[in-house]
Structures are given as structure tokens and as C-alpha cells.
Length: 260
Ligand SMILES: Nc1ncnc2c1ncn2[C@@H]1O[C@H](COP(=O)(O)OP(=O)(O)OP(=O)(O)O)[C@@H](O)[C@H]1O
Ligand SMILES: [Mg+2]
Image (tube, rainbow, N blue to C red; front, side, top):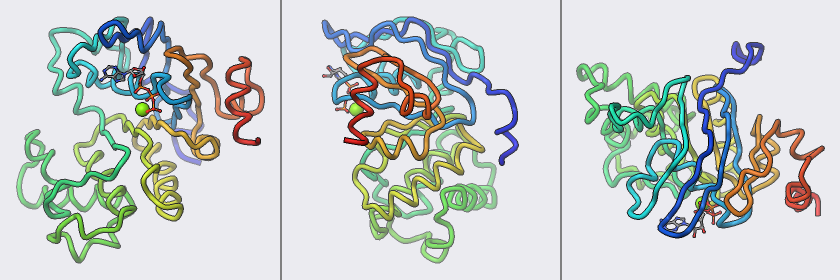
């Protein structure tokens, strides 16, 4: 059991009255959500229900989409992160993002990991850069597989290794929260198993939020599960509750897909 397991859960991110409009399309409707620190939270729901919209609202990436507008309140560690006086780059740096398809940069494994820390001014010297590269690869469970080929092109890795490299890259800047939008949908079952094991480890150091279409995956890896439908957060509870004892009929019908 990790140190964090026996402590009372802390709220890492709190959204109240979260709404997103893309022009006239009201894609996220009155969402209240508390994301607990050092837990894995899964987001589920049918295509188009607002999962990615919710995820992209958390690190304020929604703001870069023309026509998109977020209203509501958003706090991290009890502090308003929509505050206009804050530097949005600093806020975004507290989130590591892993995309659906492995998307390494077309450079070496080393440079994939060192790039963001360098541009954020987090690298003190050469030795420190080497430490960042090694520790992020170790935390992503990839070090032993790549330690002898750090200067080689990242595209030489298998798809599953590339996805773990992308996870290593997401944590290289030492964020608080790791956001993953269907990180296993483009990799094979064995690579998926590796990534799931890794997520279980990541929760010790980070707060993890993962979108998945795979109900059994949510069941296996998530402490909490949120079910979205047509832009609303229908139900958000301990994963076991969502699967064994859902309160809402929509949730019940959706999770029935796992057994049916
Ligand atoms: N950039 C955008 N511009 C306009 N509308 C958008 C944009 N992105 C999403 N939407 C709309 O917002 C709604 C929610 O989309 P979102 O991508 O959040 O769903 P999702 O649950 O992630 O779906 P999926 O499982 O297919 O990825 C949909 O109606 C979608 O068409
Ligand atoms: Mg999506």
C-alpha cells in the first residue's frame, strides 16, 4: 500500500458550474466535479458526450480552440486557476498530456524528453538534463529498454514503446496532473498491459485522469469513474459503485455493455 492510500483524499481539481460552448453547441453542461489527488479517475461515456471537452477544460487548452468558451469556476489545490493575473503557460505546465496516438517528436529519444524541460528553463546544466531524461524514462518503465539507444530516433521504437515515451515526456516537466485521452486505443494488448501497469504506478506521484472507451480498463485501473452523457456529468463515484451499484439508469445501461 502506498503512503497516499491511507491518507484522506485531497481534492486536486474542483470544477463548479462548468459549461463549454463551441459557438452555439453547448458541449459541457453545468458540470460539478472534484478530482482527487493521487487517484486515477476514468472518464467514460458515448462518443460526443463531452469527455475530451471536459479534459481540455482542466488545463485551459479549450481556450486555444476558436469559438470555444468555458464558463464556471476551476480550482487547483484550492486556488482559482482561471484568474486572469496568472500565467496560463505556468498553469498548463502543471499538466502532462498524453494523446490517443503515440506522437513522439521526430528527434532522438533524448531530445523528446529534454525539449520541454529546456524551453521551460528547468534544466540547470548538462548533468541535470541527463538526470531528467533518466528519471522520466525510469518512471515510465522504459529505461531498461532504451538506455543504450537514447540518441536514436524515437520512431525506431515500437508503438507501445512510443506511447510509454510519450508518457515519459508528459512527466519530464514534473507536472501535478497527467491527462490521458484514450492512451491505449492505438496500441496492442500487451503494450496496453504495460501502460495500465504504469498508470497504477503514476498515481503515487501524480493525479491521473484518463478517458477510456474500454469499460474493463476503467474497471481495472480507476479509483473513481465519471460517466458523461450528452454533455452532462451523470454520475461520478468510486469505480466499484459505478459498476456494481449505479444510481442512474443511463449509467446502468452503459456499464451493462461490459457484461453484455
Ligand atoms: N473543436 C470543436 N469545435 C466544435 N465542436 C466541437 C469541437 N470539439 C468537440 N465539439 C463538439 O462537442 C461535443 C463533445 O465533443 P467531445 O470531443 O468532447 O466528445 P468526446 O466524449 O470526447 O467524444 P469521443 O469519444 O468521440 O472522443 C460534440 O458535440 C462535438 O461535436
Ligand atoms: Mg474525445
